[in-house]
Length: 335
Image (cartoon, rainbow, N blue to C red; front, side, top):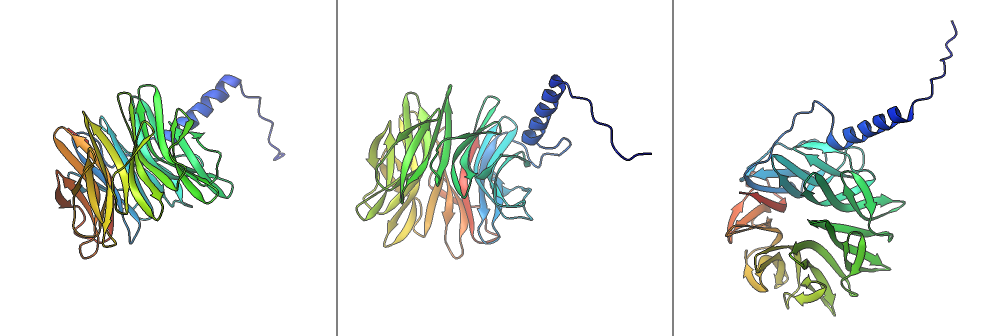
């Protein structure tokens, strides 16, 4: 008998579409039958990573949860909880360094991704901001339900934060123009340049008709923590400093980052431009979240070795006492 295979009949268009759709769903939702490692609900969620072994971490109410990347290099940059689902983004090294989205601990594909920096869930839609591979460089991208959208045509650009308000999607990041990085804000894919100086936009938050972006800008010989409100700049510190995260609650605007005194950065929180020092040792605030009357800041503090830290109303909790060189990158609270 001949081993030549008979040609397949031409597949009907409808069936082909259904198969492709099923394939896309599988890619984005994970393999059927995988059991979630954790679920959402009430609690204080903090993500980060261990710096020495470079492994992503999740803490819920101060207790470290099992994470699926214990055997590979990985970093968790952002967390968002929607109902019973916990979404975490960052990167891992399954084959090469690539952007990753974990839903309840199950990894989902992000096509052509280099790193995922921020996640936001609105209804049934999952938005992820980060950087995607493009030739020999990387550029700012946004994934919506796993579908990639290029935000910039400039190689060496990055999207650091995403926020959804109604039908509008805001992304903060930076673009390199020559050797100079400039802070930018994209609204529904349309770019607004925030600064002509060396700068970066790290976080975006929308409250009503106001759009707040936190980051930093270099003026003369100093890099300073900066807050842009509707494009208007406010310098938060006269010292060398940087702003990593902004959160608005009512009439109050909270920004966290670091400020250097005697060449040593300390974690700080600005409320309506007024500074509160969170630590007296080498430290930084990475993320701020307000729930009711409570203000949470995630970051890191170097006591003897270096530990992931969470400040609640200025009171510190060390999350990683059993191992050194941890960093907390994001906090999210569900009451």
